[in-house]
Length: 136
Image 1: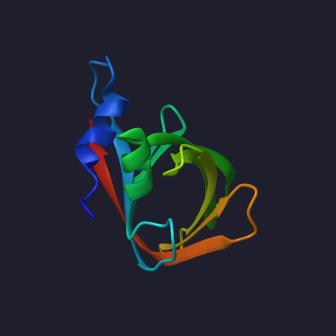
Image 2 (image 1 turned 60 degrees about the vertical axis):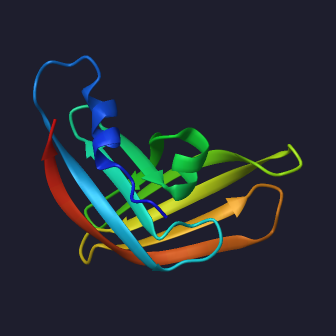
């Protein structure tokens, strides 16, 4: 799977803004994954806008770039993000995939789960993230 372009994600934050700002970039490597969970995932936090963007292989395939994630909870120990993706299948039907990411701030561990709405199966992945700063 191709690496996700961090430049593409950062460009979304830039928009028409002419000033420089700093964002937190989390590059996550998931070593234990199941169906519909990519081995690489990136999420970015813009503290000024209090906005998170996320991208992985599924999002890149469906949307062509990062999408916004909803913050479900954010404490000193754990951040929980949720988002969904509409994934077309070969018959022309669309499945809504609902993702949940839990990032543990103390040890940089990440747990990701996905469920296709209307189905009982849930898939899980786990790994670690490296946090860095990036200027836009």
